[in-house]
Amino acid sequence: MPFTPFHFGPAILLGLLFLKKIDFPTFIAANMMIDWRAFLVVFGLWDGPLHGWVHTYLGATLMAILLGTVMLYLRPLIDEELIEMKIVQKISKTKIFLASFLGAFIHVTLDAFHHPLMEPFMPYNWRPLFGIFSTLEVRVLTFTCLLAGTILYILHIQEIITLPSDA
Image 1 (cartoon, one colour):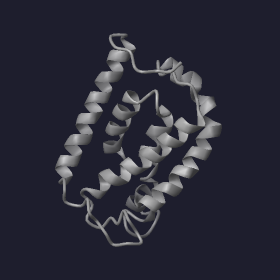
Image 2 (cartoon, helix red, strand yellow; image 1 turned 90 degrees about the vertical axis):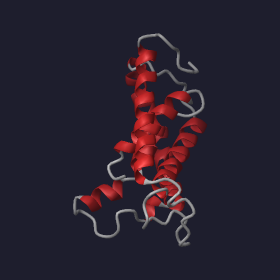
Image 3 (cartoon, rainbow, N blue to C red; image 1 turned 45 degrees about the horizontal axis):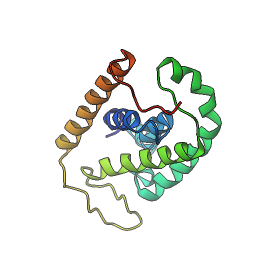
């Protein structure tokens, strides 16, 4: 799923549902960052397979460490924007790194269900998830998550429901 539009659905839904446990902006970024290489390949700016080393659990681990480290410094700078969006969280190192790892691993796992050339356990050529769900089933799931997450957020900002913030 290059460009991550399908990954945004689970990211927003799970990010909102687990607002007390994980850092929301880090979780969104972690779900998106795994496709940076695929984006470059699609636009001809990088050679090689669409799903390379970043789409492995080892690659996702490295990317999660990088993102978590960067977010430790960036996260305080976006706190005011989040408050305007009515997403209130206390910043913590644990929440940032948990969000970073969960988001990266969820991305790899979703893609592993339907990309035949992806090797999530590289260097091993083992694809136990491939074929469990079809591309259509994964896209329906992720789109449903996007709808549910959007509805949840709208209900929250209209103060019909309260998200589990820890402010």
